[in-house]
Image (cartoon, rainbow, N blue to C red; front, side, top):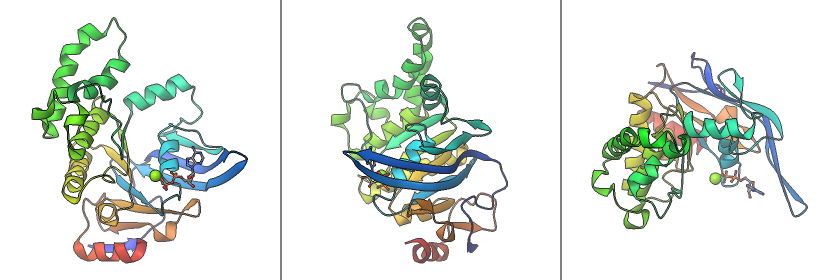
Length: 271
Ligand SMILES: Nc1ncnc2c1ncn2[C@@H]1O[C@H](COP(=O)(O)OP(=O)(O)O)[C@@H](O)[C@H]1O
Ligand SMILES: [Mg+2]
């Protein structure tokens, strides 16, 4: 397999599922302004597993939040297919985040008073009206349990987060994120708080979901080994996507893994 550097839109033919165009973001706090994103152009294609790398504070989480409509850009826009989404009313963005998008975070963000299965059910509960829920509950619970089983967590269904390991909490969070069958999964440092083994398990699950469910995954990480194990890695630096240092294994459409020699190049090129 050959390796080459490509621009940040990659050489992939499929139309972008998600796109940031000239996105700018400045935070203002106590009279101090921090210009974080200075015109980011970046597209993610359907079925891709893309990683965003960059120094701490380079704006990786900011970009992820903007693309997932958790926050709004000052300038530029975010498109889902051909629909602009950053300017949608709040309720429409809420709905999008509860259906089309899924999220996982470094610190899991599970609800501590709920069991694993209740946490996984939460997005479905939120999406239902009080009238619908009694009719939906049985099928939803079945699906939540099946997802936990797929995450290897059947034996933890009725445990609360405080009774689970970090890896188990993150696997619960993945089950919750995919409960409503999203098209895009956003992952912000999903292995950042885990040891190597638990981290590798999470990475394998994400790759499996990407491959078998065709789930598009956009992952922020500072772990170069994880990043090199995705279809495409882009680097955020000085408020922009550094396209000269984006890397994609070439020669296949949507390559699924990187050979060891390619990985070395990835370390040298982007590390
Ligand atoms: N809500 C906020 N208010 C003010 N500054 C923020 C806020 N969020 C992030 N920042 C600042 O923006 C910069 C980029 O943050 P972030 O996107 O979290 O970086 P990364 O995820 O790459 O570490 C940092 O300097 C951070 O302190
Ligand atoms: Mg971050």
